[in-house]
Length: 248
Length: 263
Image (spheres, rainbow over the protein chains, first blue to last red):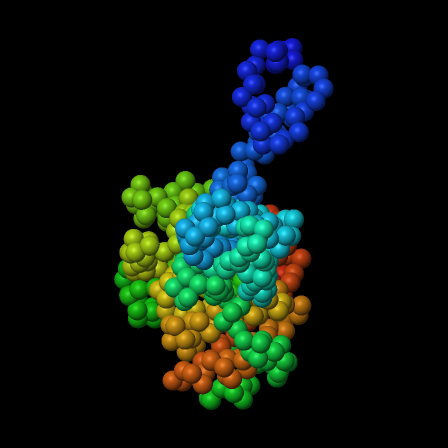
């Protein structure tokens, strides 16, 4: 390939991009306007286009990307991954009673709580109006409900001061589903399954968590403990000695 | 194909449909299905392996096949069933799912119908049809298993594999009223170790599953297959261990399992 000169950056129209970055509070790249500088601008724009403007969480675009990637990974590795969807209960009432600015503040506060509840590897996103989503890679089915409940209760306990003398609290309904391990699926199907559980949580009275049952949830602790208690071996199907537990 | 019924041939006009499933992925289910198919073929049976792992099909990888025509093409009417049934290295036939079947990890009525139609069409031409299903208890796996006359659950002695296998057995006993399930214990340290694994599963079944059923649920131990360097080598070379290293412990063990399965 023919070696080309560095792009003539002076001829690029970057005003709109720089304005966007500045407005979003992004530190503009400094120094000489060279390729490294341009990379800084592009990185800033990428970051901006993957975040929700109100809450700063991952936006829907970024969320779907993370979700598809995780669905793909669990299909191959069989590792457990949990998707949680949260919906702020009766959010319309907050807007109606206290105004949309208060509503926005509530969403920002909930977003902050959610972000504080999870590990750095988890993706917290604003999924829709008052709906949030969290993708939790490497989350064991045994801990799914515990994790979801911890997040839900953290938000419930939080007092949100919408005015100097007015604090309110909100509750969440949560629905969750584990990615089907060893099955090639899609992020879209995964969302559908978590959404069905969120719908169930709403239907059962809100302010609660519903998770899709897993293979593990079919096996009780008692069954599990017996499973790992050694017992007399049973023979192969055609072994000459008749097994005691099988009538002959 | 020989359609005449010799006196000693099976009286049934259609193949026995055997689902090969597992609670957990990565236990060697597909590897076992392919090798058992080859072992059954050596016993003179006409065998078809249908790759029903619609989500994560990898029978083609195990057999080192690069199919141009797959089940997906049959489902979408781009090929006939005749074109999609391919000869496999072990002297049996395969029907591969292909990786274009992402959406089929969810079971729509169309997929149900198409899968059923395909199975109905192939069974008169074979003695045994092995359905290599996906792992776990997802809707698509349970449906595929429900189409089979009998079920083989592949399990390893590892705790998560045993727990998931138990969950599968429990679901099949309660939802599909299965009263006998066959068991193959893969990756045992020594031949015979599978007996202990089977016994542990059986005791939990006796205590927690059978009481809720009209008659006891029995696990039929078809055998175990030891962890064997020959298996690792065959997998790496994408060969069937019963073909490439027939004298190995694992190949012999699979032969014994096939003999019990053929009875």
